[in-house]
Length: 189
Image 1 (cartoon, one colour):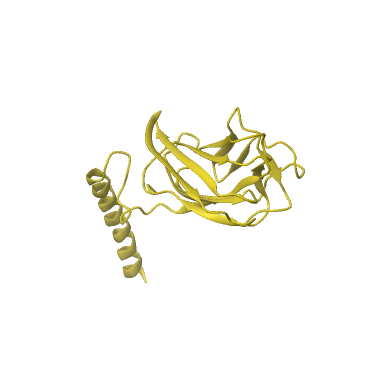
Image 2: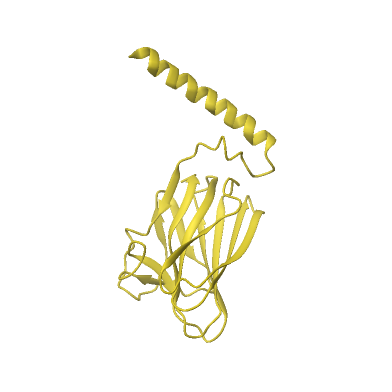
């Protein structure tokens, strides 16, 4: 029994060494997807406190902190989500960008994807990751109309190391609720 265990430990050391080599050959702030052994951590808002429709102020899960941007009026949604709860924004009076910020207590992490929701419109989004204040990626796109369901928006730079992430969604309609849930990160925390 000890022989296989020893082989596993040596494989882990070798994987760790290869992981370091992979990150040297990758572009700045990014590691090779093939050698990225960081576990995926999911922020699913399962412990989100507050009554349905109350203001969302802050949330911490798995060592990561989620905060609304100063200009964004995010709300707690206890009765919906993928699975419930989730955070959302009410219909604005015109096109409005709503942003949350995620940090990992100073540790670097990666961003894989987020589930987004819209009741009646496509969902324009921007993912902005920074490391020590330097922008590592700014990814934008649009998720087609989800017809009241959640859809996964994937980061096109999922192995880029960051220490802060901003997720923004833009509500193009004045009669539309939008939200997000299930944020998938790697490492950090």
